[in-house]
Image (tube, rainbow, N blue to C red):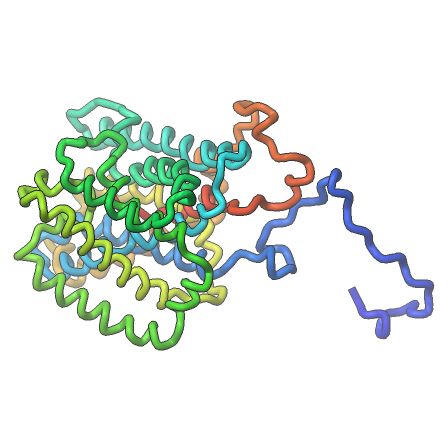
Amino acid sequence: MFHAASSPGQNRTPLPPAQSPSPEVPGPRRSPESSGRPGKQRDAFFDNAKYLAIVLVALGHSWSAIKDGNRTLEAAYDVVYTFHMPAFIIVSGFFSRNFDSRPDRLKRLITGVAVPYVIFETAYSLFRIHVGHSDDHDISLLSPWYLTWFLCALFVWRLTAPLWKLVRRPLPVALGVAMLASVTPGMGDQLELQRVLQFLPCFVLGLCLEPAHFRLVRRRSVRIAAVPVFAGALALAWWAVPRADSAWVYRQSAAQDLGAPWWAGPVMVLVMFAGALLLSACFFAWVPGRRTWFTGLGTGTLCGYLLHGFVVKGAVYAGWFDAAWLHRPLGALLVTVLAAAGVTLLCTGPVRRAFRFAMEPRMEWAFSRDAVPAAGERGKPAPGRGAVHETARAAAPVG
């Protein structure tokens, strides 16, 4: 539109001011990206963080097939696995702060997390059986396989989010739960409870954070300090490769399951949480806060996360990683580039639209009318919205 001073017909009687729509009549929906109001815009920082985290996830899964015998790559792998999932889980917790048992939010939790879990756990199991020719023909929703554990964990964490608001010191309590889990062998693969409980402090930390905390770690001084911190972490990991069991970084076993004394479990929970917190802060410090060429890809990380596993496992089953030259520096560099490019492609709009039926099903037929927000709520996003479809997309999580 033109300003009245420069537009033709400026002497006409001005039109009456536009009236706000009645709260009973929902106006046309606009995506947060298209809204001109600052309060409705997506925060580019979190989309950037989710995209970069999902790239690290893809790199970790690809490196796992070629890292044996390469001490430097093993060190980089251990460093990435120390913080990339915690960073993702912290963001998931941050966007879960307003989650409650309101019907529409529970509906989004089911359609955005539970249903994709059922679909992809079944799909990955069939893929393992028929493409990987596995002798294990079981398909069990209680035993997540490969990377579907994160959806199972996110579902449990989000259901417990309201409970953590009642606790006076939620983070110490969550750390206590994780420490107890680390000395409880024999949990088995049921719902990946070891990972659910040992990563729980990261989710609870996210629940406790405010936007100001993310701004705090994005200062120039922190970005500069992050360089020697990451360099030191890589040096420490390189030293530890032949001396320590890297299985600790997965947080999926009790101390006794790893052949360690029971007291090592609680100690390693605290050590790994401290390392994850420090390296996640350094990671967030490097995440750009402005819009970049990959900001829009941050909304498609659930797609990238759930689909890239088929590519990685397919390459493993086909024996593509068995080539000796891939285990040398140039081969590892090629795998790194291809993994980053592949997961980037899987986060794009066309791929997201093609798989929306499985990752963002509407399923209106499955819910009662009580699960639909009141008419006045339909035209605006509910507080806390995005934690299911947005943070689950980010899920960058490990297999």
